[in-house]
Image (tube, rainbow, N blue to C red):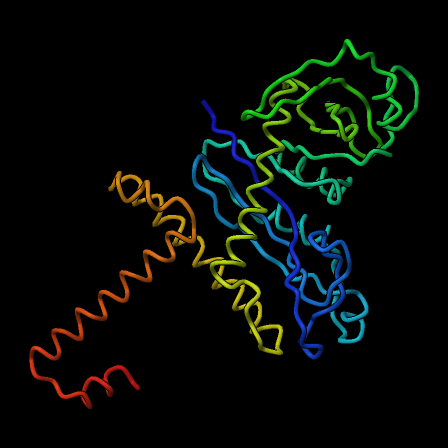
Length: 308
C-alpha cells in the first residue's frame, strides 16, 4: 500500500526591533492580528509516517525593497510554487500538499497538479462555486443545504457536523467541497480528491497543525528568531542551521524511541530532547575535566585546550 505523506505549506514572521536589518519589512502576523516589523519566511514541512521535518525555506522580501536594490521580486505564492517544484519525496509515497486559505489560488493548485500530487485546503466564505448550473458563493450553498444532509463524524476525538458535495470552482476545476457546520458558523474544506470521504478530507487538512507546532518549537527551543545580525545572508544562515538542528534532533528522538523504550517515553517533545542533549554534553565535559585533573594536568593547560 502506498503511504500518503503531507507536504505542508505556510509562512511565519520573525518579529524584530532592528530597523536597519537587511530585507526586513512590515508583514502581517496572524498571531498578533496586525503588521509587525521583521522577516517573513515561506517554508514547507514534510510528514512521512511518524517523522516530520522541514523541507525548504525562502525569505519573502517586499517589492519596494527588491526594486530599490535592483533584485527580482517574487511573491510568497511564487516562492511556495518553487518549493513544491523542488521537493523530491521518498519513493513509494503519495504526496498531498496542505495549505491554508491564504495560499489557495490557481498557481498553487497548478503547481501540485504538475507534480501529480493531491491537495487539500480551506476556502474563504466568499469563494464562488457552480453547482447544478447555479453560481453562488460557498456560504450561500451551505445555507441552502438541509439540516438533515449533515452528519456527525469524529476525527481524533473531535466531532464535526459535515456534508460533502462535488462542485466546480473557478481556477480550481471540479473539486470536493466539505461543509462543516459548527456553533461559530460554517467552515469550508476543499480538495481535488473527489473519491475521499468527508472524514478523509478533514483528516488530511488537520495535519496542517504540524507546521504550527514546528514554528512554535523552533522559536521556543532553537531560537529561530534569536539573531541580531544586520546582513540578510547571516540571518538566512542562522535559519538553515536551526532547521538542520531540528531535523537532527527529530531523528535522534526517533532513534531513542526505537532503542530505548524508557528513554523514548521521556523524550516526548523537542524541548525534552534539547534538555537531554544538553545534559549529555555537560556530563561529557565533566568526565573530560575529571580525567584531565586525574592525570594532574595544570589548570592553564585546560584553559588553553578550552580556549578560555
